[in-house]
Length: 419
Image (cartoon, rainbow, N blue to C red; front, side, top):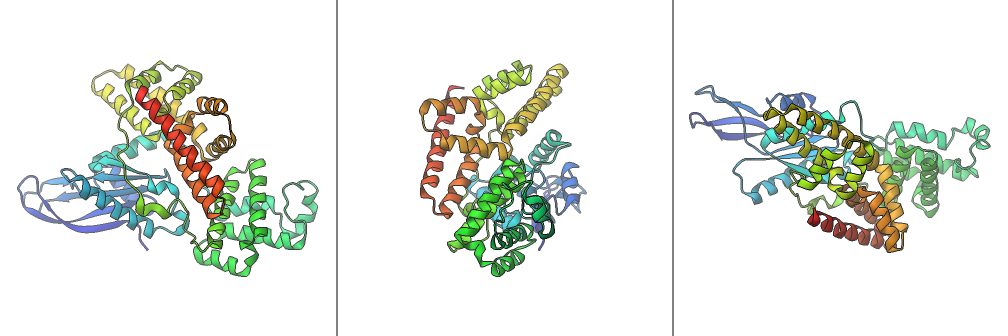
């Protein structure tokens, strides 16, 4: 099933006023159609020609642009469109995108849609994001073959298992044949290519849906984390949440994707506060940049990079190349810092520390040293944790996660008001 979608529409030529029938793309998946991604970059996507006057222009129509490599979803808001209409259209296209993607690709970031003014705004946002991420690739935990190969080190193959057990007893879960078979079944689940294969493994191994299966997945996840295999650990934690949902009659759909029907699209901020911007310019080392994020956590948000890029572009237009270079240098430093503190594994560890911290003083100290807790990423991590805990019947953990989420929102609102 194709993910990208084009539709017929009638557009009025801005030059001669004639009504032109055109085919325009309303959903573009950059992985499926890299040619359309290239057309966007070259300002050729949804370019229309009038057969009467030969005028050419980019149609001002709704577009949902999905880049799974960068884990971003953009929506181009058409010009002169009432808010209630473009919001309905955005939600409609988001449903269509999620419905067309395989279950394993329905990840939490899909609900975080960044709004831009028309296709030109999406183009600028994509180019800025690619400049920052050029040469890097975000970690993408999944239930696929790469995870299976690493899990092999945690659950050795039958012929090598006995030889390796003494070297890494804390990793090997197989204390008896039943455990060995169950561990192999867990590896098969992680290696499943689609929902049918996943279900086939479950049918052949009903013990995966028992308390014993849950405990073993938990043990493997902890072992992987302790050995530094954080991608595998994350995949196992996701698998544990999925199995918990299935035990209670749920579906394979990740919990973060289930409430998409209730998502409220919000306009991403377009600029930093004056004080935050000044703090960036005054930062001349990694240490001072880290201090700036403690005072202004908004600097760790992905949209902050776009805001700095816009200021850099404005400086160039004014002929102030020196200022533009200073901004770009700080953008790079901030991007590196954002990668260090904002990756899923590091964020999950900090969130766990927050949930186990009891005193107000200790919490305040944790927030002061980890401003990433005051970002949207932390809000999403806590929401996912709450959903996973609820699915596993851990009402106390779910309540604690939601309470922490509310606390962080309150602290963040206070900081934003003072800046």
